[in-house]
Amino acid sequence: MEPIAAFDLQRMLFGDESPLFLLEIIFRTLIVYVYALLLLRWLGSRTIGQLSTIEFLLVIALGSAVGDAMFYPDVPLIHALLVVTVVVVANKLLDMLIARNKAAERLLDGVPKEVITDGVIDRKFLNDVSLGGSELFQQLRHHGVEHLGQVARAYIEPDGVLTVFRDKADDRPGLPIVPPWEIEPPVKISALAATSNSTLLACRRCGQLHQTEEAVAPGNCPNCAHDLWTQARVHEAYRDD
Image (cartoon, rainbow, N blue to C red):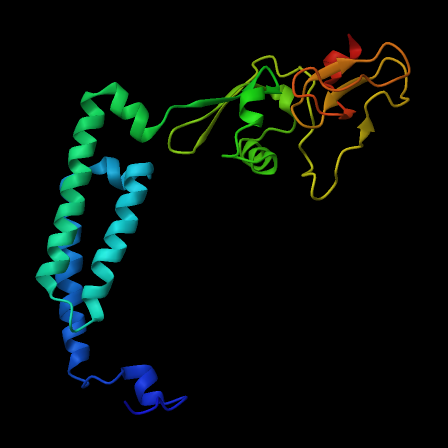
């Protein structure tokens, strides 16, 4: 085998095949693309409209199956089309199973997870590594949330979307998340540290509220055992009360 010449533009741009092979690549791509498109249309809008776990695996499998057949001359088109067909049909069968069997739906698609209840992040969610605190706060800001007290309920749906139900009264205090902590972090108040009298504090990890009665911060958070607090964002109506 001859050594490869470095920076050979002919090899880098066109490869070792004849220029006519470029037309074959176009033909291969059109065949695979049209066939895959027809199969995806047969699957229906569920696959196109969202990316659940099953659909995500479908995208990975299809990308691997169709890519090689488009530009490798030694990969027969029939082999690639057969792989695409098997992947899509398997996905369709799983969709039918999910639609008819609740246990299969829970196993394959997952279930919603409660994230926030009455302005406090759920303790089980805090121990889940599926979504970090910074990412959660970012998604809440996308919903126009400035502090956790504005959230009555929040759930992570099986497709990964965060669903937020705002507190109707919108006057409950909460852990501030605006401005983003990366820009302006809230004040850190350690557990049992000296503070002013009658200060409403929020746990920096979960948003649990605590009203100080003496000039000292509480101990570890009773909800998540975190040892850092900060001043809660207080609504004007709440402050007047």
